[in-house]
Length: 268
Ligand SMILES: *Cc1c(COP(=O)(O)O)cnc(C)c1O
Image (cartoon, rainbow, N blue to C red; front, side):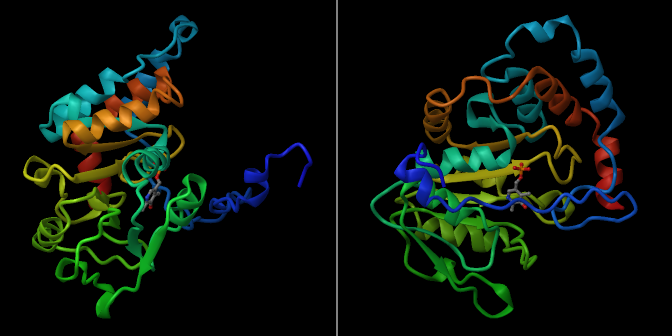
């Protein structure tokens, strides 16, 4: 505590990141880093980007990275939002798309950053108990007006939720944004990204930290309807115009260009 802190900061209870031990001879699993390194093409792109150009600001819209993601998933760039890790993307999502009078819903057993974002932005929330087999059951329940957040597959339960279940959930929740966090989807399961074309309230969030072994570069992204992305861009440009540096933009773009390496390391 410090007398110089605002009252708001004195009351904050921050998220505690997974421990990063300094011991060299342990295999560390707690923060789910990839045991393989990033693609050699990513390292080459970063080396090339480490030049005199670093005196220049990066692209504010990270257009090169958005173009690579857009090509990979077959979506236009104005349906893609990128941020400094999906944690930053999620922070802007909570602030810009889930900050309503009605509470936001998320499963009681899941990624634990959400209550922290809700506290930071003054958002009311309900942690909904998971059903048998760690299923969600929301697809049959009433829709929330404050939006909802779900990880597919859920972490740490691993429950994958079928696309049919996600579509039923979307049909019952048209009044507010439905966020699907797909941090682990590349390790198995169908992404909900193709559903974005039919559901303007759906936002799918992914990260390059896990399957693309780039936790140290900090890149996350979201794909959704143009209106959702435009809202996120407004929040971002009210906070930090350049959340991704030149190394991250070019390194991240290179990660999507090395499909062979990606498939090999995900399958192992
Ligand atoms: C690791 C993880 C994140 C954070 O990813 P970053 O892009 O590294 O910020 C978000 N959501 C879930 C479910 C995760 O497991």
